[in-house]
Amino acid sequence: MARNEYYDDEGNVQKEQCPRCGDTFLADHGDRQYCGKCHYTEWE
Image 1 (cartoon, rainbow, N blue to C red):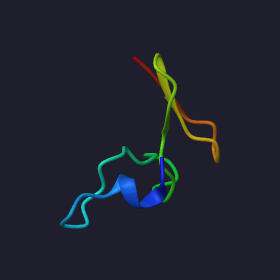
Image 2: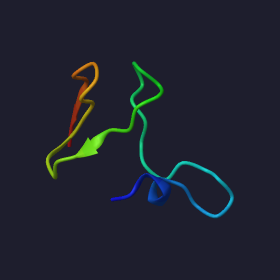
Image 3: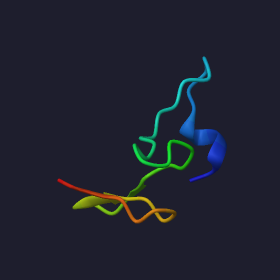
């Protein structure tokens, strides 16, 4: 997914950002969302 696909036409973020870092997007791995910068994980 290209970085510009993270935003809609108004410039709002479509992907979820890391609550710890705030400046990185969470990677979607199906059963979890993961931040590669601080290793924050949200299990679904």
